[in-house]
Image (tube, rainbow, N blue to C red; front, top):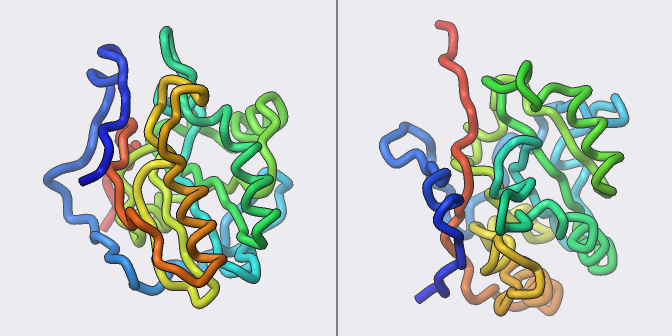
Length: 211
């Protein structure tokens, strides 16, 4: 049974998970999808998830500039303040880390490429922050929310998905460091436990595909 992630009432009202959509549902052990899709990083260089992987695996975090679960709100820090330390932890353990912005419907409302570049610098992000055009990668992953995290081992197999930790409200209130614990397990050659936790956040802002 996963621990309940603490949320304030205002954030609970903002939580939107796509319950009735056609998105895939990656299973633990599945191969990394969309590994060769080229995406533009905030440096303007194009990379793929395969490029970003470290020798012990890859952490993919679907994120954005506008969701209170990421950026915080009254009474809540949000998760993005933990991104730099998480990037350091990944690097120390030879795990790549990529932040992916798939909010296609909000490119003109805070989630455009220039917005991403500005936020990367202002908030001290580290590593890659890429623009997922037409949410191709998010669709392949079945990513539902910002944030929504997926950890892959050195063989490119999914070993953990869900939340970063158990408190969006404050880093000081965290009791279970899900991602860090999962990385520690994978590096030691063990299976993360839990391997799946509940992802909480705003829905990824998709647009209707043109047929």
